[in-house]
Length: 263
Ligand SMILES: O=C(O)CCC(=O)C(=O)O
Image (cartoon, rainbow, N blue to C red; front, side, top):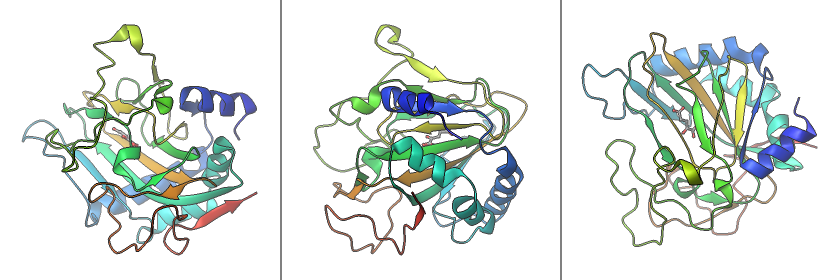
């Protein structure tokens, strides 16, 4: 399912690609994405893509109303792979995130870390990025070792690059790995549906636009391990989870964020 070498690579680089671990679940995930796009949730976004420049749809936190997503979260090998990659005795589900770039979509996914947008931190966190179409240039791109950076990268709005929080937090500036090759080792893989990338919430990542004739669907499943704890951020997080009533240092409440796998 996941080898010791792959687990070592995940901890060293902050990301690793696993071939074929979710092949049996591709049709279920595609059906979930189709249902999700037909019935977008309250957080669905079109990312301000100008008319004639394709379409970049994303949405999150739909697993309790999209039965195919719930099936994948609860029944597929995803939870066990997540727990093993984090070297955690448990895998707690945080949320799902769908990202669809239709053909000829120019807009890239900006380089960013997920961690500053979330109200949770720990050394045991993992996102599982699952392309549902073959990808090459429109694949996920990640900056090796960035999960060990001391300062978090300034979070911005994907729509217009404005600051995500209204605060004077001491963020580090946005990275430019493509312009600064000397200090960057970019990880990216050509992938088939059923393959997946595991990456730490702190790993800097992004994606090019999709300038191909084929659409690019991807589902990200976000997992938490034993040491993940609620943290306060200087404003409304993304996702926001209104009225969660958690306090700093607490494990995320299990009635909203279920522990799906235990060793
Ligand atoms: O699929 C993409 O374009 C970016 C994915 C991403 O940022 C994520 O899964 O956190």
